[in-house]
Image (tube, rainbow, N blue to C red; front, side):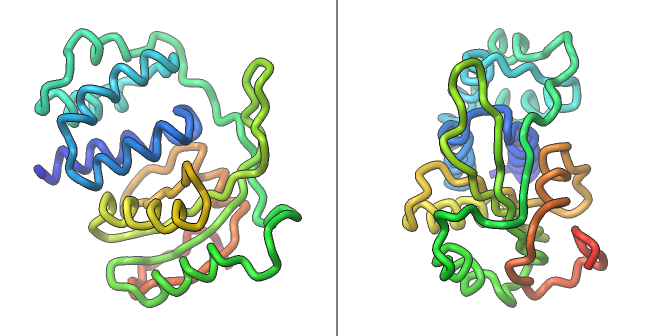
Amino acid sequence: MDPDIEQSCHELLLRLAGRLPDQVLWRFRDWLGEGAMGTLARTLPKSLLKHNVDLEQPEYRLLVAGVIPHGADWHQVSSTLGVDDVTENRYTFTSGAPDWVNSVDSVSMLVHATLRGRPDVGEVRESWRHGGATEGAGEREPKRVLLVTALSGVTRLTGELQRVLRVLGDEAPSVEVLPQRLELPDYHRAALADSRLVCVGAVETGHRLVPA
């Protein structure tokens, strides 16, 4: 896969966290990690329109760069460009796990075992998302959000961690793998501001995502 196209799609999907439903977003990330660009190009613009997600100009450019080379419908793509400001992050985050999570958290333990000291991985953090109710439909329970910094292989790492979380019972995992030099969206800044450190990989990024 062309690395520029891969990067554009990954960054766009990061920007769509908290705006597209989790059960839709994880599947798009899975397809990207598997290199199924034709499928992603056919379905992503249509899904943005279905869920009334308007894109800002930088996001629109990422969409064009990512899916047009793989046969996306140009009319659908052009229709995603919004005229209004993008809705602000409607979630809150906490670093503490909800009461229903066991004191021995198998998910955190497995993520720690998988990523501790791993090449190309920096910080691994976890936050719990609350809220986001939409007209008559509330979020059923707090949602685990995994935040990972990585130097390379971000789409493959995303897919790998999603599969780990799905095996452990999270049917629509929220895995946010953050490349270097990314201007973080409000959603991710809010999640990181109230998160806890799970482990660190082998990469020294030169700065902490969250001050110690």
